[in-house]
Image (cartoon, rainbow, N blue to C red; front, side):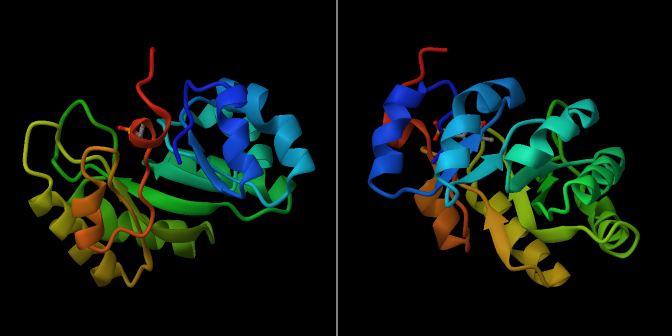
Length: 190
Ligand SMILES: *Cc1c(COP(=O)(O)O)cnc(C)c1O
């Protein structure tokens, strides 16, 4: 469940009934919101789903369990180095720029096999799957289908795709991690 911008007060009841996986897109907000609660509730898993700058990795590694937005090699190197310090292995999704949109982050399809193999061979990262944000103005089906094929080609298990507006379709194409915020928690004011 994506809890970005929602206060801890709003989210706490969901922790109380046993929901475990929570997504945030800003490092500072996540630290303020989750540090203490996570320490006291170790079965909570935190997912970094937003654009991640390399200089923030040192703050992300101690708190988060998953990163969905691995999109460049410098970031991959930084994650490898920091997680070594913390003796921790973050579960990672490579973000794919599946619509090849200029304004979007993500590895391009054609660069994906090499990027993936460098992350595994050179850095020994725990890449568990692929993530995408399909273009806003197009039918997401063809992009979800492409993602499903890419995942299969690389022999990966997980797919992070689908949000409030398109999660049912994403699941039809094998999504294993849907990222839903507003459909559960209501509209975000920010
Ligand atoms: C905000 C966000 C979501 C959740 O969006 P909703 O439409 O509220 O479900 C999912 N993925 C990413 C990367 C986000 O930033």
